[in-house]
Length: 135
Image (cartoon, rainbow, N blue to C red; front, side, top):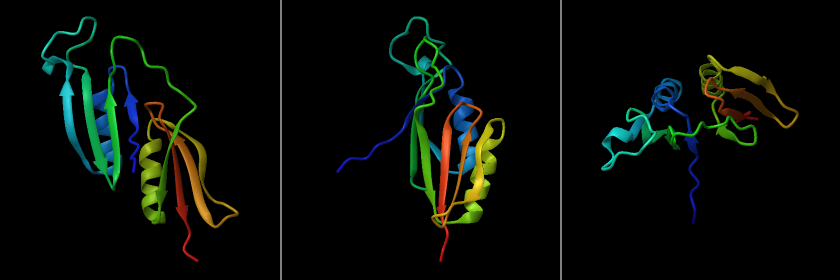
């Protein structure tokens, strides 16, 4: 069996992203190491940048880093999909993730009996929130 964990890069905004996701989801930062903690100096990297971090909430696990000296480019080919069973929780998460970002698809009922919405957060990460309606 395999488990896939998204690994996100933030070019110097990693700590702010961790704090933002903790505010959105609750949960906890389970691990964080900065470049200043590395056993060797890495040329061209800010020692205060996040070298590696892990975050967990509701069974969701994210890994993240500020990366190396190169700038990360915001991509539009990947979205993180959250499948939920609680409409109120879906609304709260959608509202929190959209602060400072923008709503791509407002939360709305679909023809298939679910409610769906899509948001790009202030870090350029796209989230799709899908919630089945109880029949």
